Image 1 (spheres, one colour):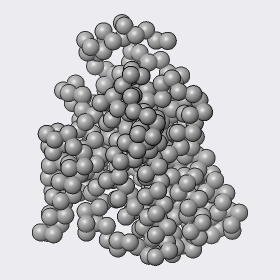
Image 2 (image 1 turned 135 degrees about the horizontal axis):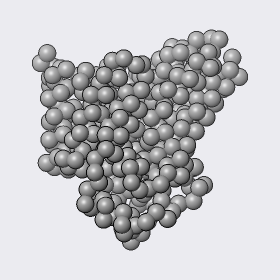
Image 3 (image 1 turned 180 degrees about the vertical axis):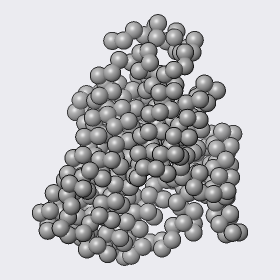
Image 4 (image 1 turned 30 degrees about the vertical axis):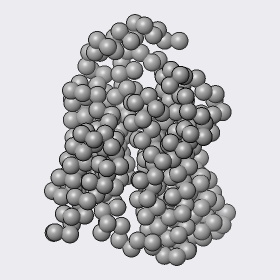
Length: 98
Length: 245
């Protein structure tokens, strides 16, 4: 059992590490110009948007209002921590009221 | 990025990354305690849990692993599930390439391990300001692995630190922090088509496919839209000046 446990953790760790390092090293081999550059430059933003979009969609109206408040606060203040606290406060308030 | 911008020393850069990650690390700890409780219920020892934290260091993959933890362990199925959930790290790793420009292979291979969604996003936002370095990324990673381990082991040994993180909106902390960071990655109106396509693709994929495919499909689909746009004047000029080396 212990051997199997270590094996399954080792496999998961190897796969995860290969993905992380593989992405970094493959990007090195790509040319940094033209459409590849456009793709790579757009990627951080689109990954981040893809990361949040379903969660915000499913969070219902309080979550969507909170996400909007977070985005506005981040936009106006440039302060990520403040924006996070504002978003959480709106959600907590919304859940309390519901 | 010009070397002259990195005036601060190694230690300061590590600390800056760790401090920037601290607020979201609190939520990471709370969710870690939930995982710790689940792991204890499955009979996973705290030593194995710690080994997972340090060697895998990927929250959602670890949740799925613990969920699938029934003897005899389905090693192949677990490995494939982890591969599918963590496929996004291929993109995340690729997007970190500019931050490691000029660094040795050993440094890349060492630093890339402690990359999670949270410190990656914070580092990419800092990169926009010209403040991102590999040490900044690693500082965030060290902060997260500490919080994650403290949370999971705390939950395992003492029970859940916070029984229902949702009541304190701690589940929303992740969405809030990623939303705020996305705002700082916004490059203006030209991002609108790509981001709109990303939102549609991610929301639809999340309804259809399990795991984290929505991040991969939404992220790649949106970035492909960006390649269909003609490069801006600034981009074209930068390309003229800096031929590929």
